Image (tube, rainbow, N blue to C red):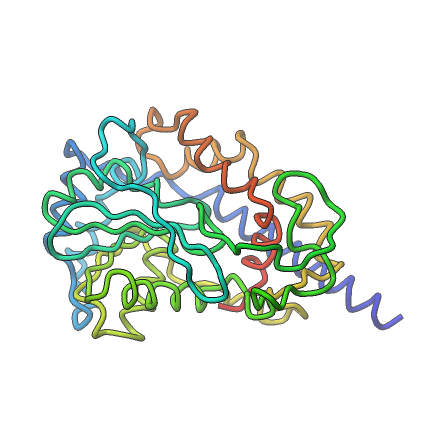
Length: 318
């Protein structure tokens, strides 16, 4: 009937969206290597952060910023090399637990990561940056170690790691999961509230990929909270494709027609072989792609709400 036809069309659109998204991620060129040592590339650029009034930088500025590759930005290091940065949790709205760390003293600098990783992706930078700044790192909700405190849609029948939460048919009103859609709008609200409630004063924001997109959104929405921006290969668009015509916009509960694709694609995308392949396209120094980095990326995918968050992120409308 009409309902089956609509479901079939929706599944086709979602398949095309998944193929385009993952295909784009898979064929991106490797980034140019930062030739300097000990991450001074990122440090030097942070010293010249862009104020919101100069978001449209020159071509020279953009070329200079792009020299900072994910080799400098994202590779991990050993615990012994880090100073400070104890894991802390901030209870945001509706009991949602937000993971963050703080390093050093000085002018505040907030580091925002790209999609699918956690604040650990800045480990090789925070030690040196904290010599000049009060450095804050944070996981946006639905990534890293930031998650709802309870099942957003209880009653699901799946027991596999990463699939336990979010696949029931009724929302959890105790944590207001009817208001939970993993989107850039929600993440921007989180960044704004984090600056106001935790950092408690205007700060510089450095963002990689999705983090760069959120940094621009924050500066545009609340310029008085943003002393300046550093954009590292920032994502130019988000949620403006097929999401606009899907019958589901990413809120809980996850519809029945989305679930089979979530199961298939999520297991494929979060496998160590897929993650290694994706990282090889964006890491200039392939030697940085080690087992610890892979394990750090995989760990959040086993959180009970991970698969339902993935479905929400793919279908949310910005």
